[in-house]
Structures are given as C-alpha cells and as structure tokens.
Image 1 (cartoon, rainbow, N blue to C red):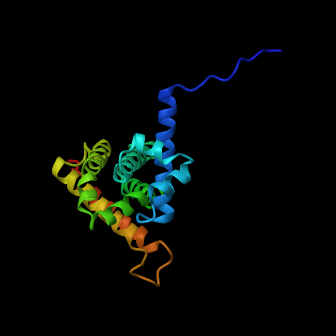
Image 2: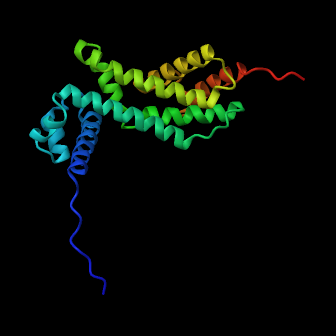
Length: 210
C-alpha cells in the first residue's frame, strides 16, 4: 500500500490567482446573463463565492474589475481563434471558413462581455477611457493574427482595412438579430455575406504571373 501524505497546500500566489480567476469568470457570467447594469460587485462575489473584501483587494473598483474581465476575454478569444484556424487561406472557401470561425467567436457568450461594456461606455466617459488600453490591446492582437494569416498576401494598408471591415461587419451582425431577407433559410443571408467578403479579400491577393 502506497502511503500518501496530506495534500499540498496552495501557495499564497496560487490562492491569489485562483481568486482573481474566479472573479473574472463570475464577471463574464454576470455580464452575459444579467447585463451591465445588474453586474454589481455583490452579484459577482455571490457568483464567485468570494467576499467583497477579497474582491476589492484585487480590484479597487467595479470599473477595474470590468476592464480586467474585458482584457481577459479578448486575449482568450484571440488564442482560441488561433488554435482552431489553420494557416491556409488560399481560396475563397478557406477564407470563408476563417470568417465563420471569427463569427462564432464574436457570437460566443463570453464575447457578450465586450458588447455589454461597449454599449455602456457610450454613456460613461470614465468607462470609455478605462477601456482604451484593453481595446488597443485587442486590436493589436487581432492585427497580429491577421498578419499571420494574410501578411504575405495583403500589404499593410490593405490588411488593416480588411481587418476593419471584418470586425465592423461581424460586430454589426452580433448586435442585430434581424435578417434583411426574411424569406431566406435561417443563416443563409449571413453565409452569403461572409462568402462575398471572402471573395473580396481573395480578389486583392497578388496575381500570379504566367
């Protein structure tokens, strides 16, 4: 019989990281299911099973907690996108598949965090300013991912423009649940829109000389 000693106690750093992780995950859950206005520090603590005193030791304000959550979700979404998308964007079908992956990420429950905060920031100058670093970090990560995919096919100016079109189109789709063609099969109009966008991107690839 193999004797086992008592379980190892977590270090202070591990306990700290565990508490922060629980708070950030709870904030995502609250924002997704309750919305911005109802995501209070009390609601987050109840969801995380953490005291408010513990919350404020790590995040001095509700705003700091929300901004940290937005940054965590952004990094996680970009990492998940990189993990699920290959490097092959040679054809229209390839690019359409990449855009479909992006759309699923944008529509994910976790990404609802960003939508809730961006809408709230329109009427809250403090939140709007606090989100700037997180938004800049997300844009930089997205540009890096786009460069890895299309850097050898699109010039820097075109790459930034394509990224802007893709992001704004997908964000617009996320905010609007209405299909402009109610007679189409569910999702058909969106699929066609993504394919048209894929065709536009591939059309800008450098032409091979015979």
